[in-house]
Amino acid sequence: MQPTSANTPAQSPPEKPGRWMLPGLGLFQGLAVTGRNMVQSFYNKERMTTVQYPEERAPISPNFRNFPFLVYDGNSIDNLRCVACSICEKECPPQCIYIVLERDENGKSLKRPKIFDIDVSVCMNCGICAEVCPFDAIYMDGEYELATDDRFEGLLFHRERLAKSADYHMKLRPEQASEVIARRKAEEEKKAAAAAAKAAKAKADAESKKAAADARPADEKGGDA
Amino acid sequence: MSKDNIPLWSPEHLPLLPQRLVEMILANLGAPEWLVSISGFMVAASTVLAVFMTAFALLSLIERKTLARAQNRIGPNRAGWFGILQPVADGIKMLTKEDIVPARAVKLLHLLAPILIVLPAILALGVIPYGREWTPVPLELGLLFFFAVGSMTELSVFMAGWASGSKFPMLGAMRAISQMVSYELPLIITALGVVMVSGTLSLPEIVQQQGGGFWHWNVCTPWGIVAGLLFYVCTIAEANRCPFDLPEGESEIVAGHMTEYSGFKYALFFMGEYLGLFAIAGLFVTLFLGGWQAPLPGLGLVPTWLWFFGKLALVIFSYLWIRATFPRLRIDQLMRFAWLCMIPMALLTLPAAAIWHYMGRGPLSWMVVLPLVLVPWVLVAVIFNKRLAPATRTYRFADG
Image (cartoon, rainbow over all chains, first blue to last red; front, side, top):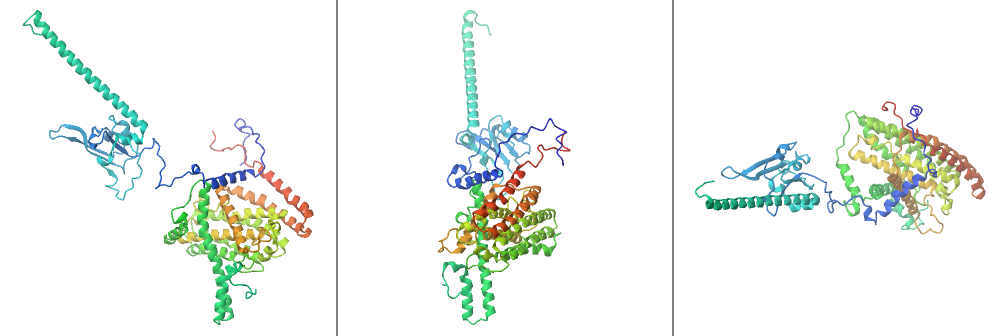
């Protein structure tokens, strides 16, 4: 095909006056690059682009995300942040989450999940569950060695396997976890402050009421408020 | 050859030891003359085969290690000490794999092709002089024999491509034919220069004439450096190695003519390829790098076959280095390079070699012959350095 530069004269860029180079020199420059690699890779460990996998692992990025996990505070799995509200269950696009709320014998909600299952053979790692959770209870994990020889039970993760401590979350994604903890702390303080204020207000109300009740009989006895 | 007056255990004759032992034992047992010589020949052939099969196994590992180092990796290091058992593991894998023959294949040719690709490589290895005393088959027309059996490789590659009854093998085979035929021309023409100067087709004789230090090697003559370089490039193309590995072209046509092969037949293709590589690199060493001759006089204590294998190892390593560095050519670049650059340059080395032959070695002949090859060389380089592709890429249909 003939070059049709005559049709599009405006588009063709002007020829750059390139530096003259000995013809064929580029070949030897290329050989020098690989030759340097061959020699220096024997003593310069920083050049190595691979790690010897089962013995050592490449550090995973904080943005790496795999299947979800549940966060619990403190040391006990009973302190799951999850309140079994089922928002993630409803939002999950491939519907791989199954939650059953725990209730006491009177049928009253205990605000924690009795069953929390994720079928990781179905999960597509989208992270929507972590995004929609209003209780900071579910986050994406960094674990990737999940191979199993049982493709049904082995890939169905139960509550015990999913639950991981807040410390683990902190280790995995320090930025996100510290932000979450700070926010939760602030919320708790706010709640505590609100509770305190409410208590103070209630106390003040009671006191003022009492004061009023005390004061009223003084001027007009027998009259009810 | 008078074998009786040389010591049995001398390092120079070490590769001949099995052959001589068998001949001695058979002669002492009173076996007839023909049986002794046939058995001796078979043992000699087995020696060569054993050496190069070991080298093939080692090279398949060393190649991967070298490529890995060139890319700042470590390479195979799990099987055995530094991955030394990797070839064994590969062999076991290849042997235990299922042998698949496509339904539309031509069964007989499909079976014959991998066998016929190993055969010429082994035959070609037979005529190369590995040491002063070690030429398995000292043929008078060794060079002719080498090229005659070497051209069988094209046939078997095309046989594989045709008999597979599939598209990619056919494409690969067509590429292989066009490439190998194109590069065989300059290969043979440059080898002719050596024949003109040496005045013989016998490979041991050609090596014999290059004795007395590296400045007597053919590559250290004005025509020889050009011819040697051309020959070297042609050997890469003949061996189907990167950057001329279009017939395989794994990123374009799966595996070329080997696409429909699996298991041991696939391994045979690899074996043929590597043995052919050894053969053609050995020919390069023989014709231009002085064969088994020592680089400096006065190194007579070192067995000569060690020099040959040292040079061979260097040439093979240069192949690996080139493979680690250069990308594959396009088919039109490949063809243009062969027909517009290699063949004219190769033809020019012929008169240069003739003049060199008649003027003899000396400063005057250097002054005459060097311009004869250097001027066209520079001209070709300048012409090829020009931009041959259009400056701007234009799209006929996709523009808009």
